[in-house]
Amino acid sequence: MNRYSRLRTPSRGALLRPLSVALVATSILTAAAPLASATPLDFTLINVNSSNQSRLDLAASAMLAGGQLTSAPQYAPGGLNGDGSLSTLYNDTASTDSKLVTDVTQFSISFPGGSTAVARNATGFFGNLQMAPGIGGTSGTDPANYGVNFSSPQQIAIPPIDLNPLGVNLMLNLGTLTSIDAKIALRDVVVDVVGGSIPLSPGATYPQTFDASQLDIALTGTSDILLGATLSQNSFGDYLAAGIALAALQPVLSGQGIDLTVVNNGIVQQSYTIGFGFSTALPTTMASNANASLGTLEQVGGNLRLTVPVDFNVIPETLPAPLDMLLEAELGLSGQLIGQTPFVVVDVPEPSSLALAGLAISGLGLVAIRRRRR
Image (cartoon, rainbow, N blue to C red; front, side, top):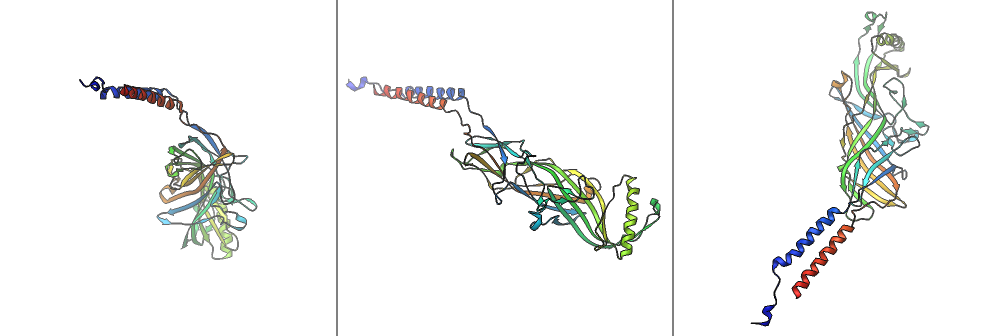
């Protein structure tokens, strides 16, 4: 017998048994080890500088009875109007709590809801811009976050109207309908950002980026609307008579539950805008973020800074009858929200169990090797 025949070579099963034990040990140790939860972080909204702000711009469109309305800001940007009535800041102030609520690990970021990005009133050189209509849709103006005007030019002669059936001994000569107008002011706007776990870019260092298009946006606030018709009189006498007749007509309609608003556009224009106002809540349904840019999470000095690009549309759906059948409006907000919080070391999965599992595999592997060498 060859002397080498007395040395037994371990069977394949004998070699695999230690490896199987190692895998079982690894599974038990990994399952038993605690995994650190994500770190909740609230990022207070800030303005870094004049070109890098927590700011959202409004774009609005509307149709009345199927016809497209012309859109224009109530205050154009520039000069004493600042950034105008279609743009405003969302940074934290003494009277607001503007923040982005997140859960962060070194490998992902999520937005559980509860963020409160509060819109500030649009401002000009002399303070808040006064938007029409007033609060609740009344005639007059009040500060607002955004203000937009819609109009549709017309040229329709209105026949004189006998007001005697309404108890007013007058003929109302309204002149010529020159435009149909809608003034919209958005107030008390608050944005919430919601999204599940979104992977950060590979690596555990900053800056990190993430896909902002996976986020949804919720919007709350109020839309005050004044819908009216601008009527131009043919002479100064007709202008004065129309003013007297409209003033007499208002309390009569008010007694019937109709709040008629009358805006005197002045002697130069010799016209009035008559209509009615109302207030409606902005829709609270979630809107998808259409901005495909990357959000960023970066360390700036002793702080973590979060930038979320935003672009979404909302459609007011609670207009009173019959406007719900006639007026269609779409409001779009776009820009970015920037928040900052003191830097913290965010949690990562507890590594001790993985180290123990590695030691188990190494030890059992050495046993197999030693057995082969006997």
